[in-house]
Image (cartoon, rainbow, N blue to C red; front, side):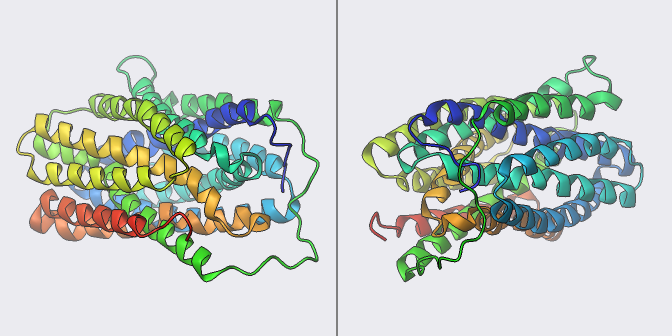
Length: 395
């Protein structure tokens, strides 16, 4: 496979990869969670800002969906994951600060679209690289270490929004530098490969109905949880301000940071357990159930303290789910020679929610409040748990 290396000593690569994956999360978390909503609110106001965010998210998600499939496939057929990752890193770092300088809705959409395309030039081959090099026996460990990424993204958001620390005009440039510091080590230190990911004349083995069913179940489960996670990712600040208008960007970033940091040891423990007992799906089903419980708590929360506690439960469980799901997906993809392309199709579970989520928010929140939105999201999380519960070890 592309940039493949002997799997005898995966630990060093796994650690470097986890750092790079964290860099990927840092590239988008502070922007999409805090800096972009804050910038939009300053330009358009809170009420109009919901519509602005919906349109920006729609355009960005469409481009991200296409870009992830295309660049993943290109890294398959060229056999050069490393080169695509490096190119995407440079371009996304150059484009990220431009978003903060946009002053109109059209300008923001254009800036976000260009940045999303460059970012997925980096993220698509990076995701496939782990499948090339990490054996199934270490996929749980990989998933646990990938849980560092949301925490790193959240902490970077808290850092760059710390009052008086970094001027607002320089926050996105600082984010770009942090991303580079995380991604460059794996590009620099990972040993070169011997094999390629180019197409061969040999036909791949046929995909069995059981394998196809497992892929669809994993895809549907992630989509269900990801819709809930994407909704809270984009609208957490607006929801908290509906309960307490005085809450600021930094407090929201700190809340998110604490939750994501706490998810790291939980995901590591669950991932290592799944490796030892060879039960990769059980932690996913349990965390989907806990996510649903957190969303129900959010729907019932009457004050800011209860709301934050319920969000903490949801955020912790969903972070564990998404990290472990990302690594276990590498286990069930049926064609290693098309791993980048197939992960791009799986990545639609990350981008399609951005197409669905804005219209859910625009339709439900003005009429029924956030409570109705959270109940629907809880039902989706329960659907995810049901899909995963039907996957048997032999299926």
